[in-house]
Amino acid sequence: MPQNIPTSKQKSTFMLHTIVFILANAGIWAYWYFVQGANHQWVYPWGIWITAAWGLSLIGHWAAIFTSNEDKGNQEYLRQKNN
Image (tube, rainbow, N blue to C red; front, side, top):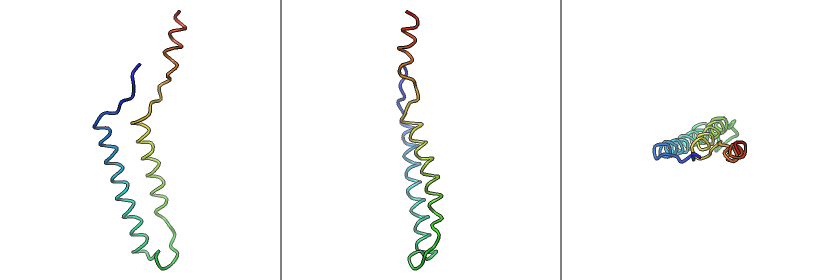
């Protein structure tokens, strides 16, 4: 039964994705707060859409690398079926 063991390239790509996510979102929210004046008045928090969408893609990237969609009971089913 094959297992989903991520390679070092997959892990490093995911870590790079995470680091870019953190840095880019920090820049987006700093721009929103300081440049658009959110520290003095109410400004629509448009960055939440970018953060939410990118965060979901980051969760999907993590799931693709570190989880398995293999049916663990399938081998047992096939063994019993063939007996």
